Structures are given as structure tokens and as C-alpha cells.
Image (cartoon, rainbow, N blue to C red; front, top):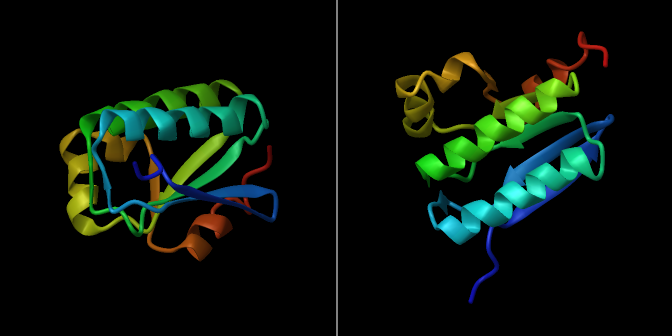
Length: 122
């Protein structure tokens, strides 16, 4: 069985970059695994500034959208911040249709997402 929810996690200038390695995030076990890994970052490792890089992702489930909303609520309660980068236009449409584009900040590139934190002090 292939590994579920592959994520590449790096720290750049005190900001945690999470790159989703899967093209599709649909399987409920995969979504659960990703959710657990992301929540561990903010709860156990106290990472409060996250960039979620979706440049490899072509499709994701509504369950994954729920994970992202839960993560956003959790990190905002600690005055943290999440931004999204590299999202394909087809996938971004899902965020627009569900009005989630109003909750998250989106950037074309990792560099632009990193720069968005420069004016933000924690």
C-alpha cells in the first residue's frame, strides 16, 4: 500500500512550507493522514506561520476542504497565519465556488507567499 498523504515540510526564514506531493487528495485515509500531520505541526511543534503549496495537486475532496478550514480556525485562534500558493486555476475555482477564497490568501509562487509574511509580525 502506498504511503498516505505525502508532504514535504521545510522551514524557510521561520515560516513552515508544506508541499503536497500527491496529484489527487481524495481518499479518506489520505485526507485523515494529511490532517493529522498538519495539526501536529501547529499543536505539537508550535508552527504558527504556514505556506501550503498546492502546485502538484490537481484535485482534492470536500473532506480535504474541511481539514483546511479546521486548520485555519485552529491556527487563527493562536494568532497564526496560513497562506496558499501554487494552486492550479481549476482547483482555485473550487475555492471560489465554496467561498473559501475569502478565508485564505492565495499567491502564485512560494516566493510571493514568503514575502507576504514580511509585513506580518507574530
